[in-house]
Amino acid sequence: MIYHVVPSTVWAGATGRTYAPDSLADEGFVHCSPDEATTVAVVNAFYRDAVDHVLEVRFDEEGRASELRTAG
Figure 1 (spheres, one colour):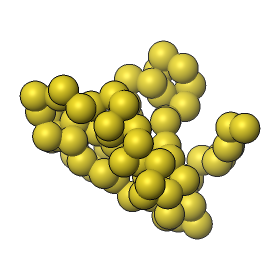
Figure 2 (spheres, rainbow, N blue to C red):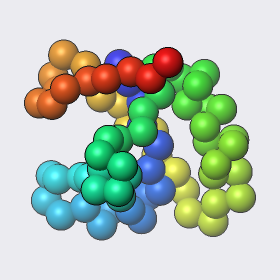
Figure 3 (cartoon, rainbow, N blue to C red):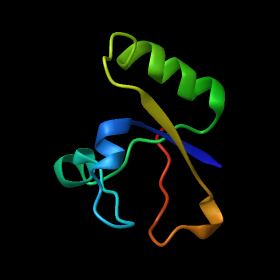
Figure 4 (cartoon, one colour):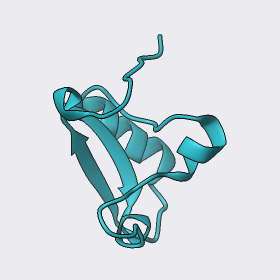
Protein backbone atom coordinates (compact mmCIF):
# COMPACT_ATOMS: atom_id res chain seq x y z
CA MET A 1 0.00 0.00 0.00
CA ILE A 2 0.91 3.61 -0.53
CA TYR A 3 -0.86 6.44 1.27
CA HIS A 4 -2.13 9.86 0.22
CA VAL A 5 -3.61 12.57 2.44
CA VAL A 6 -6.44 14.78 1.18
CA PRO A 7 -8.81 17.24 2.85
CA SER A 8 -12.30 15.72 3.01
CA THR A 9 -13.88 18.64 1.13
CA VAL A 10 -11.44 18.16 -1.76
CA TRP A 11 -12.21 14.43 -1.85
CA ALA A 12 -15.96 15.09 -1.73
CA GLY A 13 -15.63 17.56 -4.61
CA ALA A 14 -14.13 14.98 -6.96
CA THR A 15 -16.47 14.28 -9.85
CA GLY A 16 -17.71 10.74 -10.21
CA ARG A 17 -14.94 8.28 -9.41
CA THR A 18 -12.15 10.58 -10.62
CA TYR A 19 -9.80 12.28 -8.18
CA ALA A 20 -6.76 14.27 -9.21
CA PRO A 21 -5.04 16.53 -6.67
CA ASP A 22 -3.72 19.94 -7.71
CA SER A 23 -0.17 18.59 -7.48
CA LEU A 24 -0.83 16.34 -10.48
CA ALA A 25 -1.45 19.34 -12.75
CA ASP A 26 1.08 21.62 -11.01
CA GLU A 27 3.97 19.20 -10.44
CA GLY A 28 3.11 16.18 -12.58
CA PHE A 29 2.69 13.72 -9.71
CA VAL A 30 0.65 12.83 -6.65
CA HIS A 31 2.35 13.09 -3.26
CA CYS A 32 2.17 9.74 -1.44
CA SER A 33 3.79 8.13 1.58
CA PRO A 34 5.21 4.61 1.82
CA ASP A 35 3.70 3.74 5.21
CA GLU A 36 1.34 4.87 7.95
CA ALA A 37 4.09 6.35 10.15
CA THR A 38 5.23 8.66 7.34
CA THR A 39 1.61 9.56 6.62
CA VAL A 40 1.10 10.60 10.24
CA ALA A 41 4.25 12.73 10.05
CA VAL A 42 2.91 14.43 6.90
CA VAL A 43 -0.42 15.15 8.58
CA ASN A 44 1.34 16.57 11.64
CA ALA A 45 3.64 18.72 9.50
CA PHE A 46 1.16 20.05 6.93
CA TYR A 47 -2.36 19.61 8.29
CA ARG A 48 -2.04 20.14 12.04
CA ASP A 49 -3.99 23.43 11.92
CA ALA A 50 -6.42 22.36 9.19
CA VAL A 51 -10.03 23.31 9.81
CA ASP A 52 -11.25 20.54 7.52
CA HIS A 53 -10.95 16.84 8.29
CA VAL A 54 -8.27 15.01 6.35
CA LEU A 55 -8.59 11.55 4.86
CA GLU A 56 -5.97 8.87 4.39
CA VAL A 57 -6.46 7.33 0.96
CA ARG A 58 -4.78 3.96 0.44
CA PHE A 59 -3.65 2.83 -2.99
CA ASP A 60 -2.67 -0.69 -3.96
CA GLU A 61 0.54 -0.43 -5.99
CA GLU A 62 -0.48 -3.48 -7.99
CA GLY A 63 -3.78 -1.95 -9.08
CA ARG A 64 -2.45 1.34 -10.42
CA ALA A 65 -2.93 2.44 -14.02
CA SER A 66 0.12 4.70 -14.22
CA GLU A 67 3.82 4.58 -13.45
CA LEU A 68 4.96 4.57 -9.83
CA ARG A 69 8.16 6.45 -9.01
CA THR A 70 9.79 6.87 -5.64
CA ALA A 71 11.93 9.77 -4.46
CA GLY A 72 15.13 9.34 -2.64
